[in-house]
Image (cartoon, rainbow, N blue to C red; front, side):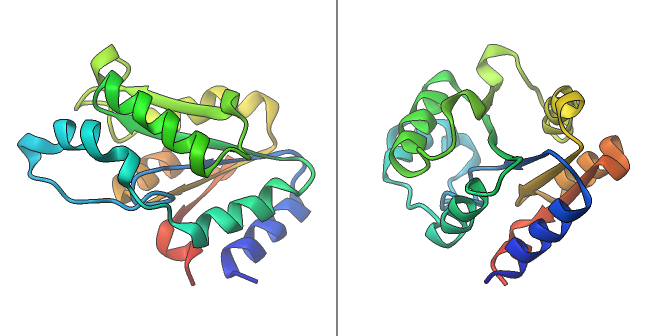
Length: 166
């Protein structure tokens, strides 16, 4: 059993209802590196070809079977087209997480910008806090993890993706 799965089960023992928020790019989906000026176009054209990180997805499947744990996808997207591609990808690889729990924050729609990029996920998680006793974030971005811990304090545990693969 993975150490991440064990840690989540320990957190579950101490708390009631838990929400686990999971990033996509670099967490459950391979993260290809593109030239900055080509990122949006490349992702629009190639997202459907991005490989799933099956090891993490399998852990999430196990977590989805535990009572009082709700899984969420929480991801940023530069364009509406990338958001649509992410939805197709999720339907293909992560359909065990309810579509109503897919939170795709789209820059092109003005849902985030350069100034709030590092803490917008924490704000989305904060909106859900009234229905959960505790929240967990699994992400690959250190700034996002730090801002989430800072904003949500002792109501959240953040994990870098590396914690889930050991």
